[in-house]
Image (cartoon, rainbow, N blue to C red):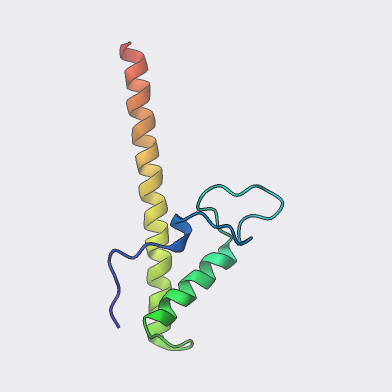
Length: 92
């Protein structure tokens, strides 16, 4: 089974199918944890991994790891942008 290194979670896209936080307007990319798990399961199934196998478990763990890395990268970029903006205000 091969993993696509450029694979992006479907949470990177705006969801309009009701999988967002209930009773609130969804932010772009906001998915419930259950929806993320379903997306991970679909991704792993599309790779040919069958539920209950070691390959499936490893695939799901890899999808979650990628999601966490994406979140970390986004937060890092936001912090850097904020720092740059603050430095620009101090200089001005």
